[in-house]
Image 1 (cartoon, rainbow, N blue to C red):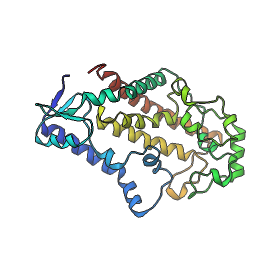
Image 2 (cartoon, rainbow, N blue to C red):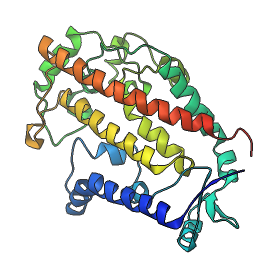
Image 3 (tube, rainbow, N blue to C red):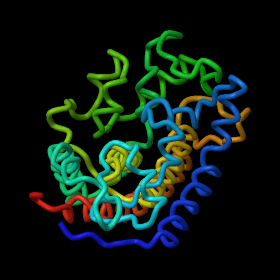
Image 4 (spheres, rainbow, N blue to C red):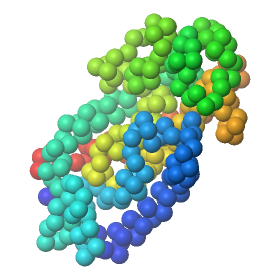
Length: 290
């Protein structure tokens, strides 16, 4: 295996820039966490994806990059790294252990990128998660529903549910499930995922983190930034009243609101497409055998 060797002054500068960038991105969350304050929008990025801020802060150069110099020895305490005469690098053994994950992620990203974006879901998945579910179905109890339970149900009943993302669909209430245009299952995820889906873009962060130190942390952080923007759009279009958190609603129950949602959805899908291509390139560039 050949590696690009980074001198210590080069890679430590990249590491420090990464740490500074992450500190800005997670600072608010850490302050709220210390104070015991919940946030209905941003907590999701640390609970659903379950990546701790300290792990996000840790910089990795990616597979095939050698870290030179005495400071590189610090990386030997992390799983998946190995020392050589030239420095420290991600171990080929880790790649082999993650081989099935790499192959699955590559297949999913490739299949998603091959399809035309669907732009007619209007973010109704959050509405479907509370449809006819009463108080037990409300996922963010600290904020009210903009239209109340009856108004929320009426919006769902007035529009077609067109969710294509299983990990949103699986949280639908029982009454919402048969209202979806197509039934979804985990086994068909690769066959159903499409690039217009807000959650498909958001999940690029999940796939980047699952690949761990095999890809460079700069790409992981770029995916985190996209996930943050997508989550904000997701919740602005949701049935929840987030005015207390300074989020103006996108009223998808109106024609103007749906147009506003699609405009922002297109911008995010284009951003996601660029990141998806980068992440797929990294997967495909990993050696097939080590």
